[in-house]
Image (cartoon, rainbow, N blue to C red; front, side, top):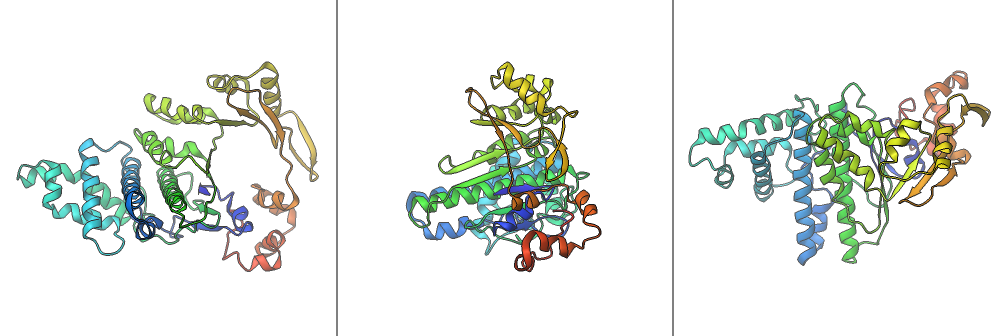
Length: 399
């Protein structure tokens, strides 16, 4: 499960594996943060404590996601009072609303000032106190609901594509440019939230014997992008990623360098962000310079030989030409796998012909070598005649 592919690097691989690509952003697709997804269907099938577990987990997931989106939109953390108001408003909304509500329905409910919500606000019968307590929250919700805020309209409509937990999935966020970091961060957080909750629900259904047991590998690529937005976002990311159950779930967090976490503005958040790395049971190192390795040594012990090996992979002066006749960096495909504090395991990735074609992230450069080959010809070369018919208008340049 690629929960947020900001460059479109995993789109072809997912399609080749008969997976499903869910596109988000720029009118390509929408994700309703209040959509219960598979948890609603699971609640209908479950009984007793498992039913309560899924229902409560779905509520907490929706609340955590809404708080995260508001944090990204404002670039600051909502107040404790807003946290309480949002949680109670969501409970009231799902008790009263027919069908799947949208963010605009949540904002309208708060505007109606139901008695149950006024009790949480502690307005003491004074409507002015209620409005003062809810105006900022409603403003943030209006921005998300109408698409007029910094997050755009990605969360303003019903979810375009539901998850199919029997297939691999890739959330394609490549329509969100690097010049819009808030949209990227919001998209990533939303994909993480939806993906983790779907896995949790699938695991509960398996516990109840209603679905076969499956193992899931969750990939959080460009992990640092969502953490750099503003104060409080690290806590939200932590709460979302901690929702997954431990059994049968692998989790991979990918970042270019530990220095990426220095982009987190708040010092406390920065320390928490580095804690993500410390909690990883396995750390995989590509080519790194000496300064970066000194940061790694804060949480993983490295021998002199290991450091020399990893540094050599990052040496730009070392060039080889043995990869399909193309010049390539010496360290490409070379990694050191560290399991806890044990000695590292050096590995060399060797891709098959199929893997090499669908893993090439330099297609814009390589297309010049194809002497004017059309988009259809390039896709046909990758997928074959039959697979090309199922591409559904894929943008090969983005892929």
